[in-house]
Structures are given as structure tokens and as C-alpha cells.
Image (cartoon, rainbow, N blue to C red; front, side, top):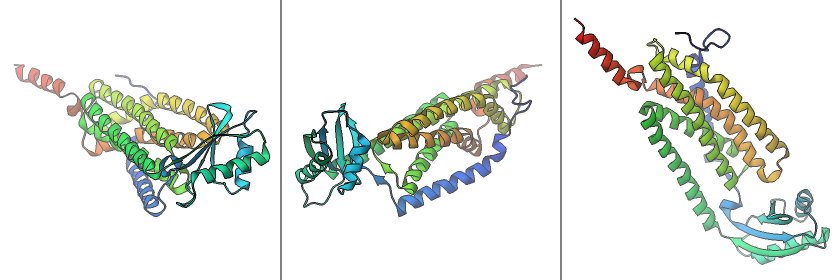
Length: 315
């Protein structure tokens, strides 16, 4: 049987699996160390704070608004469009128990009115930290539920060793992506949580494609070496993996460069997640399956049994 060749040969991905797993282990340990030392820089979605909705007569200039607020002692303000180009939402971290939301809101309005007389306050409200704690808990449960469902799905569709490999790859991606945000001190809010869930989906898609090709080659390729079959499968899917990753990265680069501050963190998480997800679908998922002893007999036991029965029946 002739198999796909890249430059006339199969690439030996799995020959580097020990090096790759060592690098992954170091990155995961570094991520956990950063979690304990620095933690995550949770945004207002999780910590609570004051939300001030402001209206303008003309389309709002977000850069100017941020500059004005920074000059008046609100450098940590989160500013984004809200509903239309003439409405903005300003979110501020808690200023202490003795400072009421109305006071902070009025200070924001006064600062903005100095730069634009057309500013109108729409509403002021305070989001307590208990709401943020609920969001943390629900977000964590969402990721845990997703990983459990993926484990069950892959175990039923392929084999439990591949399921463990797939979930290991996803945990690897989530931990290292969160570690990046911890090390760099980037703000972690609901948009970043959404990006993390998107990274899980992207990485899983790559892993499923690779696992499906491995199963197919176990049935078709007359080779008993598991490592060689996985190398063949990874080589065959490499073009598809690269095309998917590159086109996704190009879109994310555009979002990162020109999408504005509101989705800057979202684009950052996805950009890094695509890189680490592509890497883990090649090395982590397959390497874990090999380490757990996956073989041709595990994926096509019925074929092996049938062939054995046929041999026994021969005179």
C-alpha cells in the first residue's frame, strides 16, 4: 500500500515526543507556579465594581474617553461601546467600602463633561463581588463539564486511551493559556473565558481528525509498529492542520491589531491557544496514547478475532 508522502517520506513526529512532553511539563509547572505566586488578574466581571453608562451627542471616541479618565484618576477604567456608537459603558474596580457607586459615577461624569458638554448619564449601578464569585464557579464548571463530555465522546467513538490523550491535550492547552495570562498579568474576564472554551473546541477538532486518521491507518496499513502508524497519520493530516491553523491565525492577527481594546485579550487568548492547540494535537494527545500502550488490537479487536478464527479453521 502506498501512503501519503511529504517530500517523499513520513515525518518522524513521535521521535521527539519525549522532548515535547518535557517542554510541556515545564510549561505546566511554570503555569502552576505563577498561579500560586501571582494568581490571575481577574477583571470586573469577576471582582465586581461600578458600571456607568454614558451617552454622547456624537459617536464616542473611546481613545479620548480613556485618556480623559486616566488623567482624572481612573486609569484602570474599562471602556467599551454599549448598544450604539453614541453609548459607552465605563466599568471601574471597587474603590473601597466607604465609596458609593453614585459618588464614583458622578466623578466619572464630571470628568467626561470637562471634555464634552454633551455627555449624559444613563445609569449607575454597583456589581457586588459575590456575583463575580458565582461567575468564577460557573465558568470553572463549564470547562469541567466540557472536558468530561469530551472524555465520554472520544472514549465511545475511538478508544479510552485516545480519550485520555484528548482530554490531557485539552487540559494542557487550558493550563498553559491561563499561565500566559498569569505570567503577563493580563486581565481575565468573561471574554477570555469564552476564548478558553473556544480553544478547547479548536484543539479537540484537530485531535479528532488525527485520531480518526490513526484508526483508519491501523486498519489499512500493514504495519505493526504503533509509533510508525501514528507518524504516518500525522504526516497525512499535516497539510490540513497547517491550512486550518494559518487561516485562523490570519483572522486573529487582524482582530488583535485592529479589533480595539475591547477584544484585545480575547484575540490574545485565541492566538496563543491556536498555537498551543496545534502543538498538543500533534504531540500531547498522541504521545499520551502511546505511553498508555495503544495498539492495533485495541482499535480493531473484531478484525483480529475474525482473522484468528479463519486461521484456526484452515486445514
